[in-house]
Length: 65
Image (cartoon, rainbow, N blue to C red):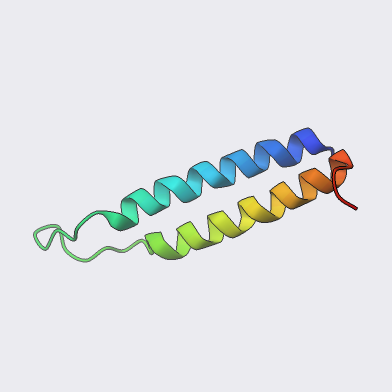
């Protein structure tokens, strides 16, 4: 894959991590019941994937060896 694809994937994963971080930081609402989506784990996975894709994009662009 080329660098543009990796940059696009990195931006998508970063946006997903930011959204998951926002949802995970909301206070719990006991009237709605427990949260069934692990937002903080999704945030961590999204941020890890974004950093990995950003590193692969820099390597594909020739910025790092």
